[in-house]
Image (cartoon, rainbow, N blue to C red):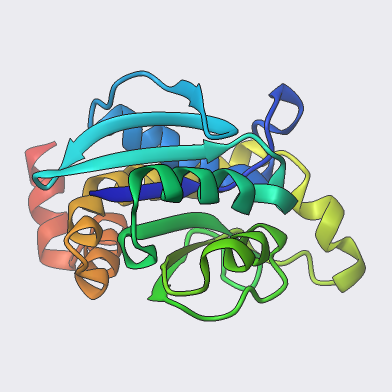
Amino acid sequence: MRLIVGLGNPGARYERNRHNIGFMAVDEIVRRHRFAPFRTKFQGKIAEGTIAGKRVYALKPQTYMNASGDAVGEAVRFYKIAPKEIAVFYDEIDLAPGRLRVKRGGGAAGHNGIRSIDDVIGEDYWRVRLGIGHPGVKELVQPYVLQNFAVEEMAWLTPLLAAVAEALPLLVADDAPGFMTKVALILKPPAKLRAVEEKKD
């Protein structure tokens, strides 16, 4: 059993915010792997599916970012899921747009959603950091993450979300390096493979 968590803020007002890239990733995972429809439970929206032969639950906390741990904690207690079986997808301002990093454990690095989850279940879970870039000035971080993605950002955002969903079976199998490598290869295939694909077109 696995729990995939996407972080964001609920409601139409925040739907396309950079801070909601975790929600967007989970939505694409649910779509790509044909999960059952989302239902309301655990102070969130949860969907169930199968990936790499394992039962997987996808959760989008509806508690607002700062209290994400409340929803995650309820789901963890109900399903009796160990932290090492959880992967949390969230925005990272200290990564360039479209970049991805994965590790298990570590600190919150100022991310309130991660801090909230750490407080409830500890730190020993997979953290999938999705780069959104930095506005350049610390004082601009909050308004920046709460702004919608610009139209031109779709050029890297849409392929990133698709690559994450496609490569996810590797992370479900606890192969984080393989997951990161496959995402990178999907986004930027080797020159020989690009040439073959262009010839097919």
